[in-house]
Length: 400
Image (cartoon, rainbow, N blue to C red):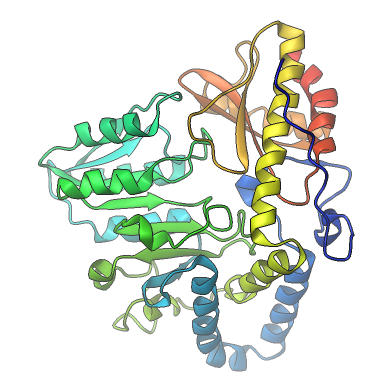
């Protein structure tokens, strides 16, 4: 294939060490799926363990004092995202945030919610369950993989009717690694009087800028993905005029409290992920710089996409590159050969065999009857990771 991008030199810490030294990842494996579950820096894990030790040493003291510490952590998280802490609530994950929002959407029989066929499966299933419980319907808008931003906006706008009560759209699609023009979608929906939930699960740490500037009524983001916080730490950012309608999934001892404080008190949960999250933000900022980290991730996955697609192409004589109009900075798709991964179940079924046979942690997805590898990366990845995948894993996939 012509046009190979330049091979990126690995990014290093301030002291010149390999970035991998900052994580606890198994060096015998290829970690090419940061976008699914993230990876927590060593310093953050050590700090979280210290918090766990503190909690176990004096549980009563811990739960008498943790809520004030959560409020401080929420303010630090808001600073990292560049948003107003008064309208940022702590939630366990993006799917939980979507449930919180759906609980606040007033649906009647015959009403309608719009999603797209790029939507995250768990979120879409939750929307459908909630709609069915109220006699409402869900319209799934098809957006072709090669659609441009204007085309995506037009398809969603054209699906809106006078019974549409909400639009749910991904900022970065998990299944298709597509960056959607969410601010334009929000404006189009608001022009029709329809509120919008933006699923920004992958955005924190990857997309700079205040999520509130998108203008969405509700925005949800996972801190455990590209921001590298411990799992179970996510946020819900809302417009001031809708904050009063939102309540946490667990009614505990502060149900009548104001937003967002009532989200801080949800019983005997493990809050250490939220308290430790700022350590990850600071670590990446101090060791690499967030702008440099994002630039490196983008150059790296672009190179990795070309390397893997070229390896497939040499064997099949076909073009396996996926040239999206708007790919996100640290994620890319490569088309799988033949009939591999043509539906969700068969795509998911590839993950464990490739891990066991090749020692590679990968994401496999499908869209419109075509299977794909979705690669994603962080600063601990290097160009050699993708070269090893092309050398070791591509031949195995070609035989499956």
